Amino acid sequence: MEKGPHLEILQARFDWLKHPGTQKEMKRLVLEANDWVNIVATTPDNEIVVVRQYRFGTGKITTEIPGGMVDHGEDSRAAAIRELKEETGYTSANWSYLGSVEPNPAILNNVCHSWHAKDAFQTGEMNPDEGEDIVVATLTLDEVRYEIQAGSFRHSLALLALTKVFDVWNGIPSET
Image (cartoon, rainbow, N blue to C red):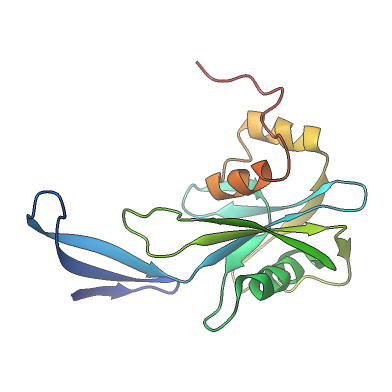
């Protein structure tokens, strides 16, 4: 293994691996990252808590659901509770696990856990991480669909989590 540069949210490494099909030895990049969480938080009125923030990777302000990294030694439920409170000031007493996915198994070694916070309510001020400039809003399902169609809600992992709770694609024409 050859270590790459250490970045704040991930560590790059290079592994020499034998391909199980071809038996050919290859050098492959692996990005080690903490697990992630996404939270579909719904209010008692069944509105969806969203965050709007600037994303450096795309250079755009995006609409997403709350989420973040699971700290070392923390379970995903505790991380979801913490991230929802930090990013939005919301909390919930009614949590259900929606499952996990591998964000990009070609190069990442982590998983993204999704949680549903039902009957979420605002309890206090947000406490975002340094560098986060977040605007919190609640949207109806139709408003979320509009933002998807308009191209402002495009985060694939957030959209996947939403589909575990809502039929977000109903009424959105497919691109041809």
